[in-house]
Image (cartoon, rainbow over all chains, first blue to last red; front, side):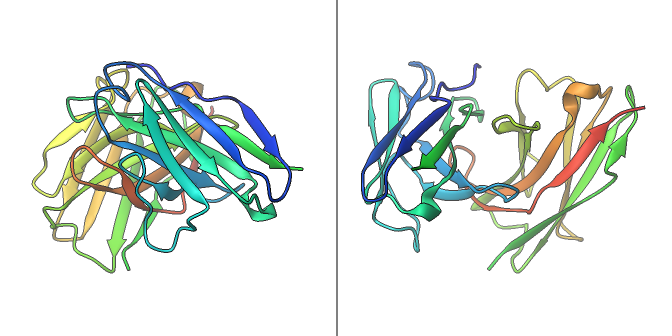
Length: 110
Length: 120
């Protein structure tokens, strides 16, 4: 199992929308609707933002949304705010009780 | 609300065994709805899943670490533990324990993380 591929960094201005991609293979992202996304501020633990591709946990803003097409999952953040600046990690089930993470994407709010 | 807390040595010598424990509070580790896992993050890098365990002791491990990893559970203490043998400097990382919803799904609660440095 290899790590999922994410862009190293993305940026956007307050109020804008950004999308972070997460590319896997037909053995993980492409085979299961079990992609999750985590937000991580510096020095803090990751926080669940999206699960099962597009579901939001209670308390997570509806500015965060997830989708999937083929082997690529995406996280979209609309109405960017300063506090959205963080690292974002995707994760997918890969069969045989194994999960795999992406390399992480640093979001900068300009 | 469930809380998780990692504990263990912050410094381990090369070739020795890294041992960490995660104490779960505010909920029972014996729920069949959850698995309990370990995730690590080397400095400046992304997250890496290490492995998970159910309350009954059913385990799954990341293939590249499988030969060196053992995860165990102690339901009487509401704790689960990680042992990683034959460590090298590449194992230096922040180690997180986390609650996983089911065997296949997402991590919904995380510990604060603990930095383990491998150095002589």
